[in-house]
Amino acid sequence: GYENPLGPDGFIPVWDRYYVGGIYSNRGYNFGFAGPMPFGYLVGGDKELIFNADYVWPIFAKFGFYGDVFFDNSGEYLPGQPLNLAGFNWPGTGIGIMWNSPMGPLTLDLGWPLANNSYIQGFPGNYPGPVVNFEMGSLYGG
Image 1 (tube, rainbow, N blue to C red):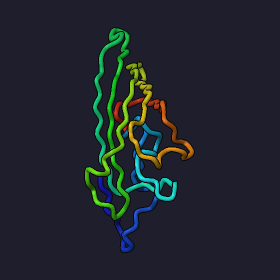
Image 2 (image 1 turned 90 degrees about the vertical axis):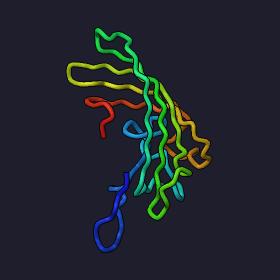
Image 3 (image 1 turned 135 degrees about the vertical axis):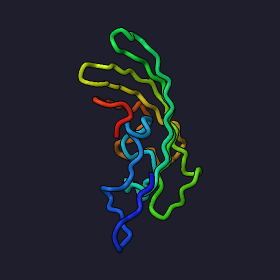
Image 4 (image 1 turned 60 degrees about the horizontal axis):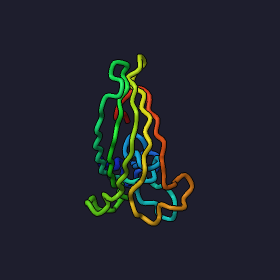
């Protein structure tokens, strides 16, 4: 994704920026923790790259249960930072289970970060894993 600021100041408010990490982008990380954190703060980016690969198989297809193995990779880019593959270095992997319930799909994933980015350790809310993600009502929502 790419955000182009509207308005004369060229500023994208913090609440409108991309925050990579979590069930809608990279399930190996908590929300917002799969990207740069200058000075230890989540500031978001104006560009993002996201890759998700899933292998889904039936466990009890008759009852709507499916297993899932996934690999995600992502990049979040600060305003002014060029969009390039060097920043696309936040891999995560994990397993999950899905149930196609009468009210819609329910998904529970356990993800692990694979990045060797030294500055992701030690920040509140970020830990080596597993990261638990729960989604109700859609697959790959957002």
